[in-house]
Image 1 (tube, rainbow over the protein chains, first blue to last red):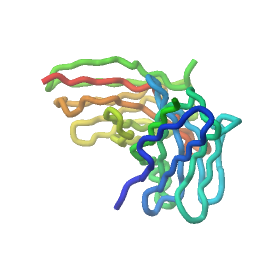
Image 2: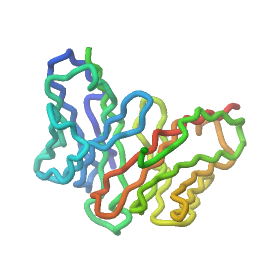
Image 3: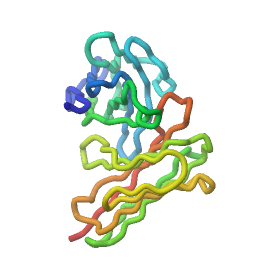
Image 4: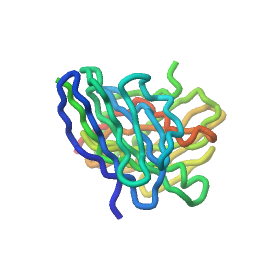
Length: 118
Length: 112
């Protein structure tokens, strides 16, 4: 059973370009979360999605950032007009669709995408 | 004040030592408590998961939650060099959609 798959693992963009980060959840999971990890900091929540719905985007910057989780295909985190401050590791996590109440809160993380903005 | 406080370390111990890692938090609504291990340039790996207060043991790892003190701990017995990593505490509240709030992480080094 494959884990959470993220690609690309490394992404280099110049200032002003767009970055697209992809995440495929674990099999049987329909809840996806995106987190950002800046150097020397812990992970910060960005957005929580279910299929075709954004549930909580309270951690997303108001501009340039968007996320989607279509009915078919991976979840996408999109950053438009990247700036150097966007350089970070972006992690995706997924949690089960069903199961006991506690188990549904367990999140499993992918290996991350390391974005470097030149 | 951060919702979750964790001493970033670094913490260095000799092989075989008992390691104690801790987090404090301010939000009394937190009910789910997790410890993740993160190796350099890798994704966080779930180690322990606890709901509400109490202790949980899994092999060399023991997690404790004291909700009255808003304090959680992770103990590692018989520490090994392979335990060298950053340990992240994380927690979430009921009704917040599973959003995890993380501590900064404690960097642990176990010396042979």
